[in-house]
Length: 385
Image (tube, rainbow, N blue to C red; front, side, top):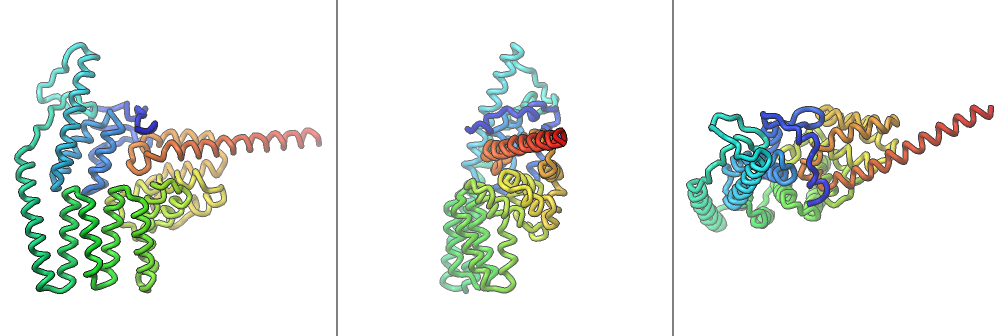
């Protein structure tokens, strides 16, 4: 685990009894945060929070377990449940060490983010058995349907069945198999929309797998295909801009990442299942602040009318950029500290927080010294006069 993920978050440690933590100077309510995302992205984020933030590990795991039961992913259910048992046991022993006795729970005590007063959710063996059987039967039916349609139906029917099988494997957590069936659908696409949808499926699952080079490859192929269609040549790059930003950030190409994030169209934004609109300003802002010069920062970010709707969802990030541009470096540094806890629990941004903050703080110190030097020079000039 990296330095950032091992941090005991100073704000998140000040928990309340309503499963809340400090976020961006306000309150993070974990269920509300999780509700921003759906399907696999919600599971990915909750699992990550449980790994990096001990104070939120139990409620995050409980929410993840509740959500994984809407899928066919029995393997992940087992993994999450075992982790929850370990966390509950750890917190129980911690309370024993601190108090000298086991904490009492009468069943009416309020549950908290620290896990005090919680009862371990029973392992749902009935769901595991029933879900496994249902998943196997569904896959058998889809396989039989695919074989039938290959012999008796047109390409569009085969393509839809291949996509359904890909969806099934995605829901089961077998992402490699999902990619295989989504890719096979290419041969049966009958329209440009079918092809673009196929690429979007491949990009989405590759993001789940953090295969960033694959993401960029599929994006490039989608763009090249779209250039042959007047109605798609501008729409497709705009719709894939956030995915390109994620991939570039994942590869530590921060300046390119900033460019793609800032090019993301708010009106056409449809990656909200993976990255909530509120997240985009933090991704764009930190990457831009670490790599853009002042003029570019003002033009491409601070004064950007197209990106303004995103900043309105997370105004503190815009304020940080504005304070840097205005030369208020102490204020900028303080505001960066305010959002640090929030960005460290973001599964895509967290691995880069240390690097980005080091780059930004280096720029703050350099610019602060330059301002002081300029002030001294002006003072000496006035004295000589």
